[in-house]
Length: 326
Image (cartoon, rainbow, N blue to C red):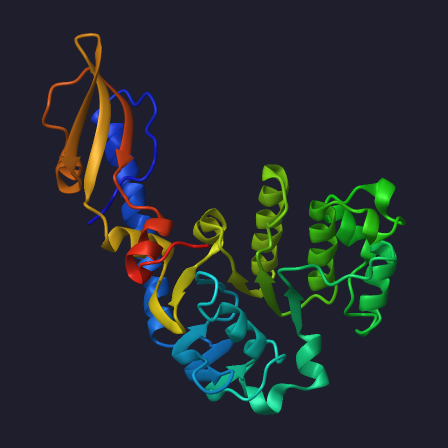
């Protein structure tokens, strides 16, 4: 079943609509090939099997998580507050120990991989900026860059320029920065070591729309370089636009795991709303997706727009978990 999820503005005839449907068929075939690779285990940058964790008696945070993250994949880890997202990320980044089950990163079991080499291969953007308030952006980044070999660390000024950081504030203390500026420095800190594995917690928080678009572009560029991205967010736009797959976490368990597109398609009504002109008047008709593939059977002079009645990713989250993203 192929759904039309685009605006076909001012299409003159049904051939334009059908060509778009053909494009979607090709896209679906590509996504199915990716899905088969993931179902077969992929290359496993991150492998998690039966992961459990407890903060004490009666405080079980994780209840047997199972998932893999492929090398070069952008993987979304979504859930409401208290669902176990932060606990999982702390385990994967080596901050939290004492978990049950099996966890491996870079092909090594977590218990034996918490080495100096491991921490040099990961970059972390925390939800709240961890920066020295009395130091400038430049001094903060030069300090954090000193933890890595010189040939590995990126140029501080080039990185800040890529993040469109205001040049007037380069040498002013972080305490004078806005939230968006601090977020840019925090992202630079996560990227300064050219990490192979990038953990991002609410990366577009505090950014205006243009800043959010810039960050999404940078994340996509990192993936093109081969970087694996583990994305934790409440932002459904970020998850939908960026992620190859998403996991919905609820009460310490994974409620659903798939590509954003497949999650929406599997729960779609497969209905298409078409706006068109007939006898000089704008009209609306709802048809089944299969009917659209065969051609439009109703009289019309001009197709104005075509919209699927596909649910949103947030609709899917609520359906699978029964809770909103708060």
